View 1 (cartoon, helix red, strand yellow):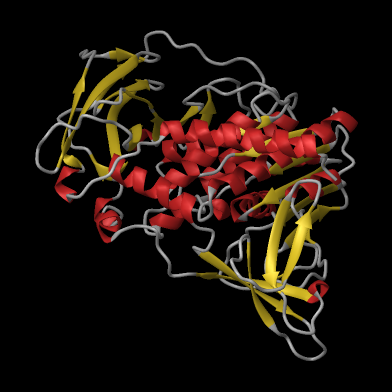
View 2 (cartoon, helix red, strand yellow):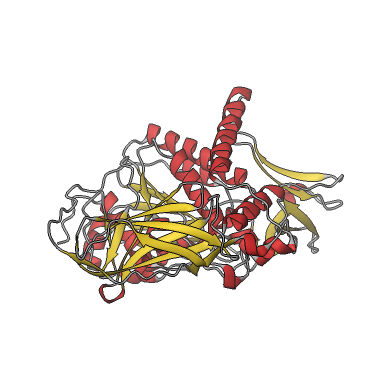
Length: 494
C-alpha cells in the first residue's frame, strides 16, 4: 500500500508532466475554417542549397505556413511530419522540426545515404486542430465504454464499467491500493463484485468537439503534403562515419534515432548485427525466458518470432477469452517467450475474460529475473481515447516496478517498445497520432534515467512511412533485431 507521501509525490509528478505537455500544445480558438493552416498555401525553401551534398551533411528547410485565405500564420503549434526518402533505395529517415511559434519552422534533415533523396513534409493537424484535440482529450473518460459481464448462477447480468462513473449508485471498485489505479463497474443487484468474468469495450458516440472543429479532422484535411519545388537532393559518399559501439542499455537515443536503407534499420548510436538466420536467432535465445507485455503491436513480436524460428511452438494454456496470453517454447533449446496484454484500458472488437488479467506493474513484480531473462513492454494505443493522466500514472507505476526488478535482479534486460504511428482513417478525436506523440514524449521523459533500452518504434514507423496501427512484418522484424542486439550484443552474425 502506498503511503500518503508516496501518493502525493506521484500526483505531483503527474501534474508536472501534464504541465510540460500542456506548454507544448497551442491554445487557440477559431471561428472560420479559412483562418486555419493550409498545406496547399504554405511554402518550403532550402536554407543551405548545394548542387551535391555529402553523406552526413544537413539539409535545412524553412517553412512558412499560411491559412486558407492566403494569410501568413502568426502562431505555431501545427503538428507536422517530416521525412526524407529514396524509393529506389528503400530508404527513409525522419527530420527534426523546430517551431518558432510565429508560423515558421526549421526542419533539419541529416543525409544518411548516397543517392537521390526526396523530401516530404505533411501537415498532420493544423494548430487549431491540435488545440481542439488536446482540449477534448482532457474532457471525458467516456469516449470508449466498457460493459462488464458477471456470473450469477446460470444468468450473466451486465453493468456499465469504466474509469469514472458519474452515477449515484453502488459501485464495484477494482482498486490497486499501492499504485492508486482504479476501475469501476455499476454493481448488479444481488451479485458479488467478485463475480465479474468478462469485459466488452464499445464505441461511445460522444464528442467534445464542435462541428467546426470536427471539420478539421475530415480525412481530406489529415496528413496533407505541403507542396514544394525542391527537386531530388543529390548526395555523394564523401566521408562517412559509422557507429561502432554495441547496443547498450541506459544509453539515450538521438533524434532521429536511425534511418532505413534497403529496407533495413540502422540505428545511429550503435552498430547493429542483422540476425539473418534462424540458427543465429536460436543461439541468442537459447536458455532465455522472454516476457512481452502490452498491446497487439507487442504481440506482433511473438508472431514474427514464430515465423522466423520454426522450432517455436505455441502451448495450449487453456485460457478462455480471445488473445489474452500466448506462450511459445522450444524445449530442446530451453527457449520460452510469452506475450500478455496489459491491463485497463484494453480496447478490441470482442469481449475478453478477466481471468489472468492484471496491470503491467503486477506482472513485472511477479518476474524473478536473471541474466537470461528479458522483459519488453509497450503502452500507448489503447490509452489514446482517455485523458492522458491515466497513461502518465501507469507509466510512472511501471517505472517503479522496473526499478524494483532491477534492484533485485540487476542482470535482467528491460526494454521499452515505443508507440508506433497509425492510420488516419480512425476516429481522430480518439486515436489521433497527436495523442500517441504526446504519450511517446511522456514515456521517454519518465524512463530517461533508468538502465533500460528504448526501441523507438515512433521514429522507425515515420522513417518507413507506415500508417498502420500494425506495422508490416519487415518493420516489426527490424524492431526485433534491435531487441536481439541488446540482449545478445556479443553474437557475431556478420
